[in-house]
Image (cartoon, rainbow, N blue to C red; front, side):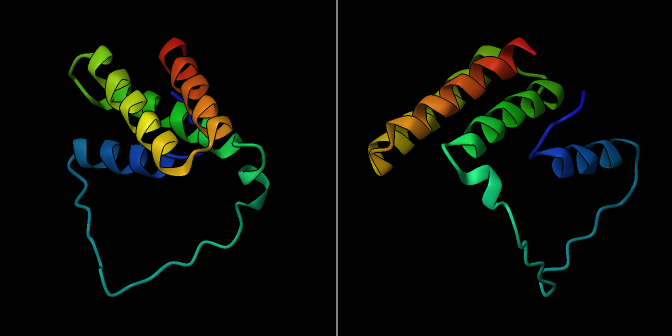
Length: 102
């Protein structure tokens, strides 16, 4: 399963850990991500982040996919109430539905 954007690093870490590769966290190290401006227009990042998150959870969570979708849609509702950004919330719903169908 490929991720167009977002979650590919988490997927890689989960797959590495599943094969016994040790993962190390270095809290004193920092990484500064420069960029992302092109995906923050018109809520596109919200769509792709939501789609990738659902796909990641479906791939690695052995639980119920319905629970995963409800959790994601709950976060979308929280964002809508907090940010009052209907376009972003709609993009997240569309990404969630697309991730469930993929």
